[in-house]
Image (cartoon, rainbow, N blue to C red; front, side):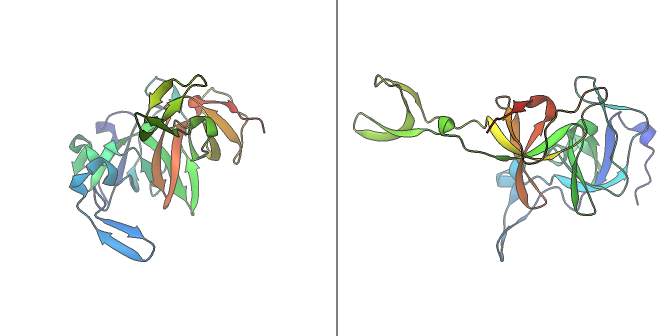
Amino acid sequence: MLNYDIKQSPVNTVIVEVEEAMDSTYKHGSLEVHIDPLFNPTHYARIYGRVVAVPNGKCYNEEGQEIEKEVQVGDKIYFHYLVTNDEINCIYGNYYKVPYYWIFCRVVNNSILPVGSWTLCSQIVLEEDEFETIEVGGRKINGTMSSSGLVTSLYKKPSIKYATLEYIGKPLKNFDELGVSSGDKVVLANNSNFKNKIEDIDYFTVRQSDILGKKCV
């Protein structure tokens, strides 16, 4: 076990031990493929580890709002890829410091528990977000066209505006519950989500503050 005086670390900091900074294998069914993670270090950065030390005192997010402290020594936690992707976060060996507001969730007794007002969502593809195949100059390309026949955009990339809420944790301190539950379809702020593989399943990590409402069926 690492002997580390947490008082010497920055505020809002959890210390984790990871087996390795980057994943060097990829599994597809029963097939295991060895890869060179340096070709895409942000994609293969290890985003989970075991907590070995937690901070004293209160913890806050980037905007100075207090976070409900829940992470405990021994927890398995998932966090932002920049933790292991940036050497500045490495204490030594396989021990890294993690800003509390970069922790998405912890896993306790096989249960996923979001941390710091994060939520985990699955994607819904909407008709209004999909691009269509249009013909321009005799070539078929992906884009959108107005009802009058004018090309309004090319190579449009869908933006996830709605998602199914899978896991939701406690709100920030002194903030009210959102009034949503697992399974609800929620409205998201634009560009508020990004995909992470958590316990072998892809989820979109979204802050509660970026959930604008619940979609009516």
